[in-house]
Image (cartoon, rainbow, N blue to C red; front, side, top):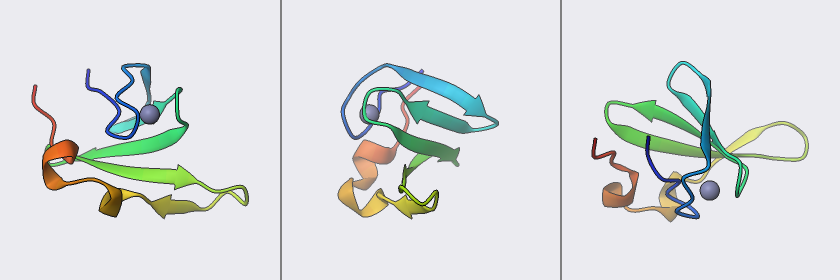
Length: 63
Ligand SMILES: [Zn+2]
């Protein structure tokens, strides 16, 4: 389990293979090669990347 890079909440649920959802700030996360890719679901259903809001360090998972 990991913390949401956006709000630091541990209320992160698995929604698919390598896909997670933060129930606290409502962002979607995809795990790829040890890195968290973050996406926000817009009102029209499209995904916008939030990756540039976080440093590589914040987006790296340390198991
Ligand atoms: Zn969050």
